[in-house]
Length: 150
Image 1: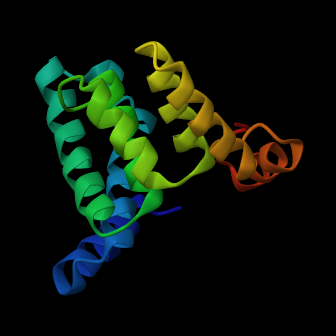
Image 2: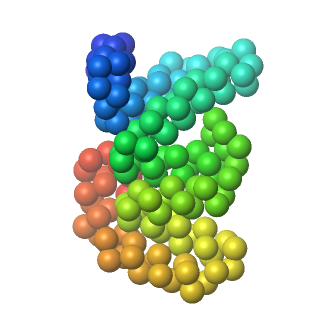
């Protein structure tokens, strides 16, 4: 896996076509590099770390506005926990919902439950379940693709 080569190709894809997959790929490479090369542990300041997160967030936003569902889900996570941005639980919930992913719909249900909107949470839980959230086949598929076991 040559991350530098991948980064160059993603940047070309962005330059010539503003391709959402290229934005998502570049954000993923930058984030992977941040953790895999020890940058998190070795950064001189939180600012060093946070500047990379802001660039990752920029590419996730570009991908999400281009219709990329995984970028939408990951933006939800960023806004939920304040990665590279301020915490905004309502915006996180909106990104989870927009993703259309079963995991995003389940996260939207959790958001509604956290603000005591139990009936709304039930609706989103039902939608997530209809798409396979929590089902053994979904968990197996996610494990086989390296995307976790949710």
